[in-house]
Image (cartoon, rainbow, N blue to C red; front, side, top):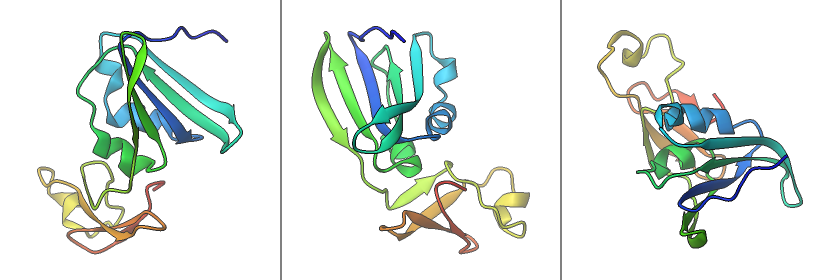
Length: 141
C-alpha cells in the first residue's frame, strides 16, 4: 500500500482500531475538496492495531470531536512537509453533539433542536453522563 506524504495538512494517528470512520463522519471529512486517506487496522507496536486518518489540507479541525471519540489519538500538523505540531489528546470535560443519548425518555429524543450535551463522569473510563437525564454513556456507544 502506498499513500503519499502530505505537504500541508493533518495526520490523526494512534486511533483505536475501528474508530476512524466514526471520526471521519463526525468531522464531516466527506464534504472536503481535498484528499483524505483512512488506514484501518494498521500494525502498531504500541497498540497492536490502530487506525490513521490523513487530511491533505490545513482546515479548521474540531479537536473536541476527535478527543471525545478517542482521547488516546494524536493530531500531527504538517506544514511544507514538516511536522510543526504534535497534540496528544485528553478526555474533554464536556461533549456537545458528538454522542447521542440512548435513553428513549430523554428530552433529546423528542425535541429535535436541543443540543446533545454530555458531561464527563469518569476520566479513567472516559464515560459521560447525559446533561438532561443523567444516563451513562461510553464513547463506543
